[in-house]
Length: 304
Ligand SMILES: [Zn+2]
Image 1: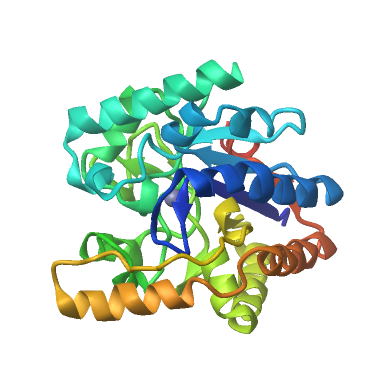
Image 2: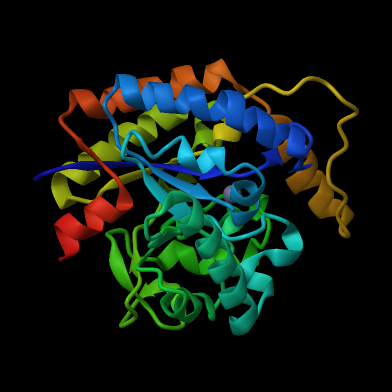
């Protein structure tokens, strides 16, 4: 069975340390986080997919341009990563306008058509598949099948359907990205098995994430399911101290459980620590003969 590794990167101005969108973070992502990741991919001859928010691309177009020479895929991470624009809070028309705005900005900068999408904070609702179709997207990667830690993240209740989502890539339903159906959107899930295969988890629990990688490898050998790892270049930077205040929340219990705990844990292994751990994961799959594909390449090769 041929095996595939999909390195997917969400490029945004979210500061992990300060838990908000910041221009200073975006500048560090441009000058430090992106170059570190691109250098790693260059050394290992890996083609990856980069999901940019329209907002960061608009302010810092070089952040998009810098991935082009190495043949990486330019993909869309919505327009804004602010909570008020989370797609699960928006109706069909509002989602379309966010998606089209971001897609236009990215295509204008990159000069290529942008066909892959990942929702900010992986938050989607019943209008998202149709909005993606009508905005000209072909691929989505916002669903993390069998991920069970979602209670720690925003929009948690709406993500429960993902426990039942198919594991292999599938054409999604027109009213749910978590179900198989007849839309034109190919869902390529982010890898998970109770816990997600993502940079955040890799940094918080390195040993457990290595065990997860081994399990995902066995599954890939048996079923051909691609391994889809999600990392952020903002994990590959270190931001200097400032008075760090966790984002306020209306519900004190949610604040304590979700935000305070989350904010502190999420600061582990930032910067070169993240790159070092990620390199070990890439090497694990390289040693086992995986093909490193962009999402677009994967769709073209496997689903056409
Ligand atoms: Zn994001």
